[in-house]
Image (cartoon, one colour):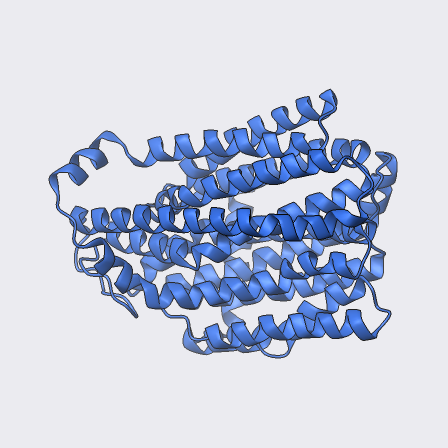
Length: 465
C-alpha cells in the first residue's frame, strides 16, 4: 500500500471543497433561510448521525480488515491481527468481506427505514409545534431526507472498501467532484426559492453520483476477474469474526452520538429554535476546523494499520506524532481566525443567524481539540484490532446526557449546557487516559516530538532551496 503526498493533497482538496461549500452555500443559506428553518436543518443534520449508529462500527472493521487483506494477511481474527508473511493477496478472503458487507448494510438500511417511518409522526409533530412557517414543506423535506439516509446506509461500505484498499486519492477525487455538484445544485435551488428543499435535493444528487463513482473505482477489471474466480466463505461466519470488535466500536459511536448529536435532538424541548440555530452554526464551523485538523491523520490511518501487521513500530509512532501536531496547528490557526473574524463575516453577509459569544466559542474549540486528540489516540489503538475503552465510552455518553438534563432542568445556563455537558463528561476520564495508554504502548517520549519537528523543518528547508 502506497499512501503519499498526492493522497494527502487530494484529501486536503476534498476538505477544502467542504470548506468551499460552507463559504459559498452557507452565506446564501443564512441569508435566505429564516432562523427557525436553520434550527430545523440542524436537527436534520443530527439525524444524519443515525446512519453511523446503525452501522455500529462495522464500516471501520470492514475497511481495516480490507487493509489487512491487501497487506497480505491470510486470516481474519476476532481480536488482534495476523502478521503478513507475504504481500500476496487472498481474493477469497476479500470476497468474503464484500459479501458480508452487502448483507449487513442491506439489513440495517431496512431497519432504519422502518424506525424512521414509525417515529417521524411523533417526533416531528412535537418539533413543529413552535414552527411558524410552512409545515408541509418541512414534512416533505423530512421524508425525502429519510430516504436519502436509507440509501446512504445501503451503500455505506463503498467508501470504506476504497479507503481500506489504500485508494485515498481516488476516493477524495470522487468526493471533490460530488461535492462540487452538490454546491451547484443547492445554490441553483436556493436562488429558485426552494429553501430547505434545496439543501435536501443537493444532498440527494451528490450521494447518488458519489456512490456510482465509488463502486466503479473499486470494481476494476482485475478485481472483478479475481473475485469471480475465487470462492468466499460463509457470510455469517465472516460477520461473526468481525462482530465483537464492531459492536464495541458501535458503542463508541453511540457515545459520540450522545455527546454531540443527541443533545441537539433533545434541546428543542428546552431551548428556542433560534438558540439551537446559533449553537448549530457555531458547532458546524468548529467541526469544519476539526475535520481539517484530522485530514492528515485520516489520510495515513490505513498506512498505520499496515505498519501494525508488518511490525513497524517506529512507523506507527511517527504517524501518531504527526497526527497530533497537525490537529494542534490547525486548531490554533483556524480557531484563532474564527474567534477574530467569525461574527464580522456573518454580519457582512447579513446572516439571519448569529454565532454564540466568543467565550462560548473558545470553550467549544478547547473541548473539540481535546476530543480529537483523544480520537487520534483511540484510532491508534484500533489499528491493533483492539477496543479496550468501549465501556468507558458508554459511561461517558450516558453521563453527558445526565449532565445535560440536570443543567437544562435545574439551571439557567441555557445553550452553555450543550457545551459543558459533553466537555465535562469527556474530561472526567477519556481525554487524558487514552493518550496516556498510547504513549506508554509506543514508548512515546518528548525527544520523539523534537525529532519529528526537526526532520520536518529540515525537509521543508531543503524543498524551499
